[in-house]
Amino acid sequence: MTVIYLDNNATTCIDPEVLQAMLPYLTQFYGNPSSMHSFGGQVGKAVQQARAQVAALLGAEDTEIVFTSCGTEGNNAAIRAALAAQPDRRHIITTAVEHPAILNVCKQLEKQGYSVTYLSVDSQGQIELMELEAALTGNTALVTTMYANNETGVIFPVEQIGLRAKDVGALFHVDAVQAVGKVPIDLKSSSIDLLTLSGHKLHAPKGIGALYIRRGVRFRPLLLGGHQERGRRAGTENVPGLIALGKAAELARLHLPQVKQEKQLRDRLEQGLLRTIADTQVNGHPTLRLPNTTNIGFKYIEGEAILLSLNQYGICASSGSACTSGSLEPSHVLRAMGLPYTILHGSIRFSLSRFTTEAEVDQVLAVMPGIVERLRALSPFNSDQADWLQDRQAAMAVAP
Image 1: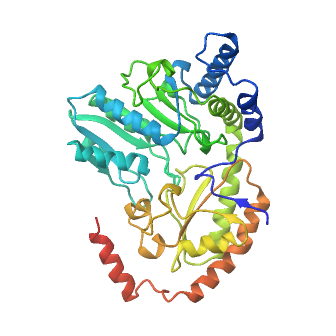
Image 2: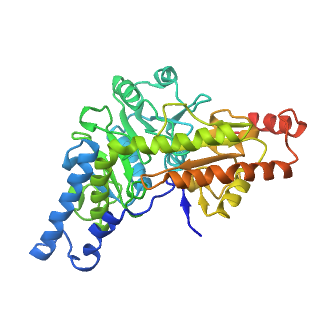
């Protein structure tokens, strides 16, 4: 069975050019980049080239890039370093729709005596800047938000957030794991102090990421040990991984002008589903979204049942974040948006890549109406006014 992969916000395939770039560093060039001899020295030069490639994608300086193992490590390192840089400040601002790599760190910090403000979002998944302004104080050490939401693709006004954080002297960290390679980023002219990215979201392998640290920002490393990464991240470098990330960043930069083609395919899929299936809606802002992402709610049925049905056709999609897929609870992102219960449980995320084809999109459009019709015929819940629904909505309204 041919696989139709529309779950690229969970992970992406390794680009063949990326694979070819990294393979020699698994076999032929295996020296330690910190070694004094020329065999290791040539590897060190390749590491610096990869760093420059990542910096070029972000509009940053080479020395502002620190290689990490993943987005989660980068987020943890950024948050803890920002707090260590301003120990007298004990307040953090984030949003209610962040990735668990942010939310769970903030929850732990609350137990350690920090105060955390979780900004709300509206029904389109967007924050209100006035709420941010009201939350900022002289005690605020850090504002940490995502660039774009992993479930809905909604893009936050990061530059406006950063400028407001600067007004009170707070540092600004952005989790850009979903945005890098999909939207242009120029950190030279940005209000962002710290930014996280992950290789496996832009056609590099898993296990490699990077953290941007603006020049002049004080940074206490999360991992202590050797001198690697200019003393900001100890541990022997994952050379094949970071070579792959460098090549992936170079290719992402080259492909940015073609991202509009992903958007066209995304719109074709989205509009086709809305046109052919009743009681269906797009979750998220209609325009301020990543070009590859659509989150669609199909009323009265379970998202898991849709995914299992799609899987029978070799179609891969998601009902939310891959990092919370083990939970039976509705998406915390969609709940924060205040969506009705009938939409919460029947929402599916389709996320495309530059490798997605029109034929693949058309195959999804061909099978989805039948899947939804069959599942709705089996569902006992087919009315927004059903007693069960009213009871469930009331229970959700008082849930923590």
